Amino acid sequence: MNSLQTHIENYLTYCRYQKRLDEKTLKAYRIDLTQFCSRIPCTRLEEINSTILEDFIAELHQNYKPKTVKRKIASVKALFHYFEYRELIERNPFHKIQIRFREPVILPKTIPLHTVERFLSTMYQQYADAKTDYLKKNTLRDIAVIELLFATGMRISELCSLKVRDVNLYERNILIYGKGSKERQIQIGNDDVIRVLEEYKNAFADNIQSCGHFFANQSGRALSDQAVRRMIHKYTSIAAIELHITPHMFRHTFATSLLEADVDIRYIQEMLGHSSINITEIYTHVAMKKQRDILTAKHPRKDFRV
Image 1 (cartoon, rainbow, N blue to C red):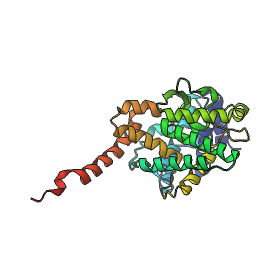
Image 2: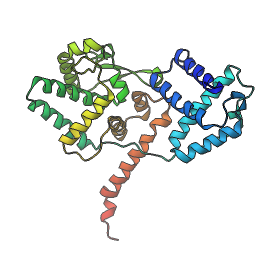
Image 3: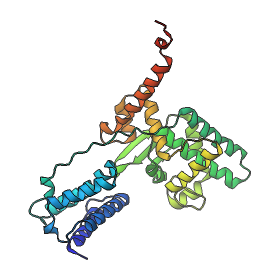
Image 4: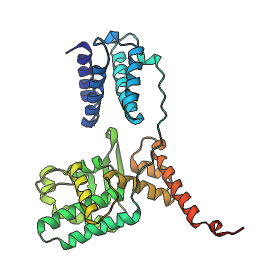
């Protein structure tokens, strides 16, 4: 193992035990930093200068989308900040580099509300038609998952990591651990959603107790995000919905629907667990598109003959 690789391993250990970063973040750091180590023409830390970093960044821009490039650069910058903090380098070469991005605005993909209703109706019909207790129980859990995703706008990772103690159905309160271990609470306002969650919790009581997670499979293990994705694909197919639906689209639909209903964007920011209002403001672009469509189709000026 060369000098740079050794320092990277030490840094990842520091991130795990000192910064207490989660496994997904550590995995992303390892991928980005291993790539960095393999792409630059030197293996000694003191040999890395701003020219080498600029060449590496240029190569990233040739091979990846701006969002991915931004993340990979952030990983390497954090590494050199650590080197500087540990006094392993005399001067951070990133101080001589100016990095600017022009990222295209990619609007969040939402699900039309009539499609959400159709999706849920199909699930409830499948539950009513289930021929075995096993199918009925699984379908009930699937309904509970989708109802909670749409009711709260939580991320799929947040839903799958919910512990049974995080869900207080009596108080209608969910405690969510978001990115960076940030906590937030969100209320469930719909009676039907509470009823389904209570039915699910009673039906899966033994399975929940086995793993400690609120959402479990019938083997007593925590429900995975891959299982949720497969489940969404299954009901999309049954409902003959052509739109490709992902778990995150329920989050986008939650946020956009509230914004279109004139809910203050700062409340939406808090409910989504966004650290900055700038992240939440992407949904205003979607709401403005809806406004434009309405005014184009419904404004009476279109029927004037002047």
